[in-house]
Image (cartoon, rainbow, N blue to C red):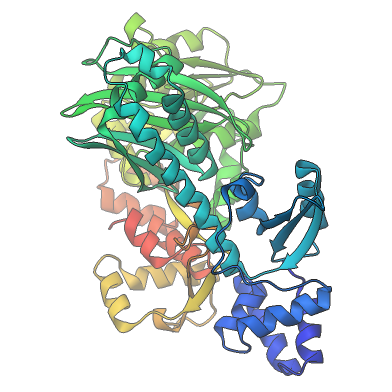
Length: 575
């Protein structure tokens, strides 16, 4: 990204803006993120063509507009789409006689990327300056080419109808489809690939940042070969088409080393495949990176160093519970403790942690695994999920007898977990004495920092929000967290943010995810309330008085700070 001081100097030298105006725009850009050049164009301070022509002249390179340019497939193949997105650079022309390729970039000062392209292609480089919109248009040509590739697969696949599934699975087009699908999913940062058979075709969808989206439609003729290829890679039975099957595929790409957890289920029109992508090269995040607010962070850090008790993470499937527990284990993973886990499945390998995967077929369940772990002299135990009263009972007794137990449950909020444990048959005195901390969570999509913009809520927006939330309570929570000093501040007075959509976020306005949390601490007051069998509402009031920030309040805190949008909070939480 071009340095702000350089842009400022060029604009002032050419009398485009005043000193005050450019300083204000730069300050606003730093606060909200985004691209200064795009902000100048969007605010109609200067026309795009004139602005980028001036910047090109300052760099001493030509300016080029690629909005109506079609690039040959030969040139597209020289540079992966991931580089085009992350470094905002494309190869748009070449001169074979001079051994030269021409690249267009939004930052001619990015010498590292220019050098990478020079080494990768073995060509001399001519650099041009272009606009982010031009890069976006060229990146779409990559996706168009992918669609053409799949269309080209159709004819040879349809002619292979007489072959067996095993033979079709070895056909080059089928291999290329599966490889391309997996590589593209990893590039898109998808967490899951859904391959869904219908009566006339096959729909492929990716789950990106928690939301499913259609990627492509394949002809019905590829179904048997596609399934056979995936089954071969995952070491599954080729001739089994009725019973569910589960397997695992290892995959190395330019971007990462990943494992794909394969699940196959028979549905009306064939077999549906879901591949869960687990990035094994990804570093475990810190608690701060997960998105805990300051108060919750202090509470979690205080409890993870206790020698015994239970720390529970709760929320729906896909809300990041296991990631939270892995992060906590990573903090506690020191040479002086023995950490053992029983999981389903093992999502990430951790050094110095003894990880076991359950296998119900041989009787190795969460309850059975937990009993075995207790004979392994552990200090810290992680149970992937408490699903039944037997597992809950063993985990509670382990926490009472000197072990720190981490696990997950499926409940809507933190306080509700207490009553779920009670329904599982855990006595109130055991809950009150063994549970240290309950973390309820959801995952929301983060606003793309390259296209973020501010706005104010309308009266209609506020009316819609008030149908789902107690706004007085939400505003009180924000005030208690020090987000604004004036108690009379109203929701319509607050500056909110959203993403306009750009090349880097796939025009969604979102990129990446962050957690919103509700951290319930077992204080003395809460413990006494559980012992006298207080109602859920009474226990929630006690937790709030003791400083608990609920999911909605933490969500609006992140909305206020520009991390996510109101729409995302409405999507993942309910009151």
